Image (cartoon, rainbow, N blue to C red; front, side, top):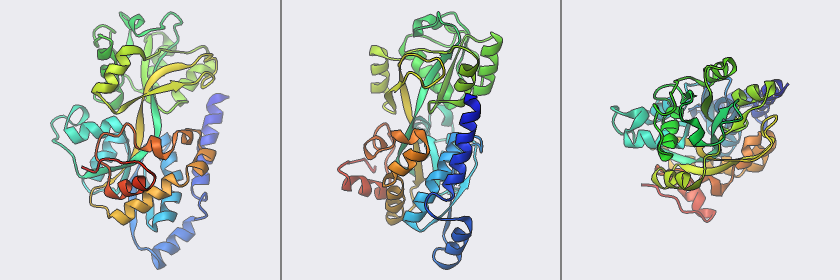
Length: 331
């Protein structure tokens, strides 16, 4: 039932996103022909995922504010979006703040590809929570993961590097936890089969994969907190403290302290200041409406938009945030 509700919510988001700002497809085509011939592409994610649904929702507000026609494109997610915006293939994209940092530095996911620095941040959208999920009630702390089989995400994925960061903060390695390298879906299958004891998943909570497990039985989340978490945040400032509230999943009867990473909107470094100012206003002047449609929108605010983002902001976004009393770096 939980899974079905989430699926229906996602479908509703997609429907509302095309009409939330009073612009239909026909009207958009008319705008292209008469008022604004400029069509720009926004990279999101898989059509079944949050990025795609959220991008469609945001595009209406951004379109109304900027006069641009935004073509929402399905992609492979954060790394692809950063690469495509950097290379001028897409004008806009959605990406996790850590993946953006890796691209900027030429590290981890982008090791050997050189530094990608032809993109800029517009602002954070919502928090993607690091969730260490297990069906074993005896796994309560990071230390309890020792000797267990733990899925740390597909090799070189964002989840994989998040898992390595967090294990290292607690003095653990891949070998200490008998690492398995599985996607979200495969992690769920393996936990159901009893071949994996716990799994790292990084996504906005509630996450469909976790909700699927919770619908069938008790799930437990491991706390990521204490001095270890504080040290990691100081070393990798794209992490933020986060709380997954009790009741987020069926049977979750207490809050879970963890870390999160901002899902962020990025834009080409060559975009005009006027365009980006208007695009930024289109997002953050409408957080109430966005929140009413999508629960993850409750994380959205001007203040949250400027935290946990370590790459430079576009000057157009910086101008908007300055008017709201927040200074962000542009270089």
